[in-house]
Image (tube, rainbow, N blue to C red; front, side, top):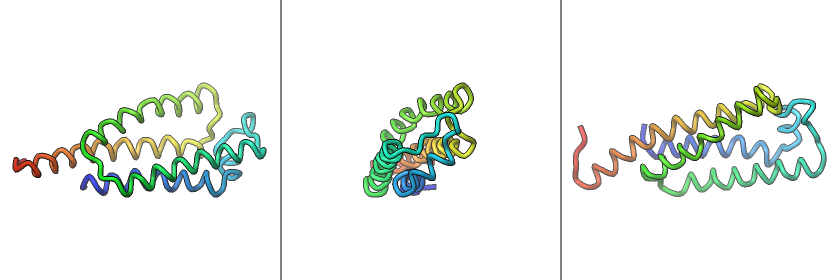
Length: 134
């Protein structure tokens, strides 16, 4: 898999989940948050849509900016605290429903894409310097 395809996969996660939050915030609140923590008010819908807009913006940037190996490695490290977030807010404080754990699935998909993308970008960087990899 090429580094560019890995980038597109990361972008797809942001665009799909972010688009859902941006265009259907009530649906995200209803399906992803457990009943005791669910408030479908204007402010929560607004905040969910803002979150979605930021995710969509990052997804678009991931489509148009070419990442090198350092970008993939950095993004993989930046994702690590989100795994703790998902675990804590699903198992310790059950805010996220099982469907809300799509966030975890997205984070895991992006992490794997980062590892594969990092390797592919490293090979591309070596090849562009005239060093042929085996």
